[in-house]
Amino acid sequence: MLVDYQKANIYQADTQILQDVDFHVDEGEFIYIIGKVGSGKSSLLKTMYCELDIDKDDAEKIEVLGRDLKTLKRKGIPALRKEMGIIFQDFQLLHNQSVGQNLKFVLRATGWKNKKEISDRIDEVLNAVGMIEKKDKMPNELSGGEQQRVAIARSLLNNPKIIIADEPTGNLDPETASHIVGLLKEITQRGTAVVMSTHNIPMLDKYPGIVYRCKDGHISDVTKEFNKMNLSDYKEETQE
Image (cartoon, rainbow, N blue to C red; front, side, top):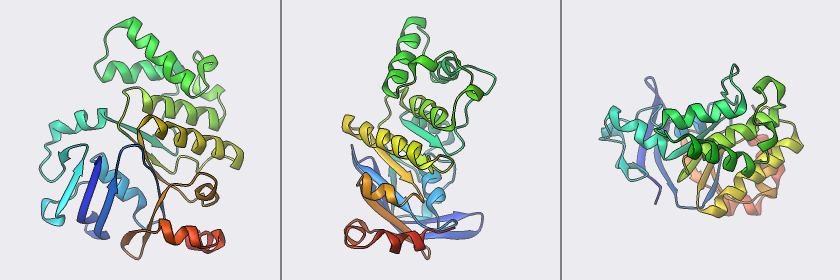
């Protein structure tokens, strides 16, 4: 199991956001997290890559990629994140560097040294997301969808076991958003798990996966329930 949370409580500052979280991720799973703004979706994701801490007394179990987050030291966080891919809604590309340079920066920062291996890996991930022809372009020369594809390529660089995507389609038009979610779904076929928070409810029907819902301070697996309900029920529930 890649992620195993049992009876975890999640706080922002001194405010409890989620209580008694039971949340699990296995290899190759495609998981959606839905819920209104402020319901705890992003907070949950942040705990997985240690942007947000969980106190050891606030969880029975909280393990990510074989690490016990209750006892993980700060010096161990970079190694944990190296085994993950993280995708943000606002892309977070370096705007003064080309697409290729953005990816090279990540590889260098994570210990890659061989120039040929770096070049080959950059070409490999750009081919995977259909962006090899944009390798020498600057981010401001790309559309929003193209920038998000580069962000996905960046997340693939170190062959992650899990990709964490926080509202990755929030700034994209519906057609582009569909392509991005389809690409993430395709990535799971290689065994990489994808956990994605979203308000884009129609995507859940087009690209089925496991569905968790954050509501009223709790998170629950609503996959079976969701499959029996109309999308309109959930559109109302996730409106901002």
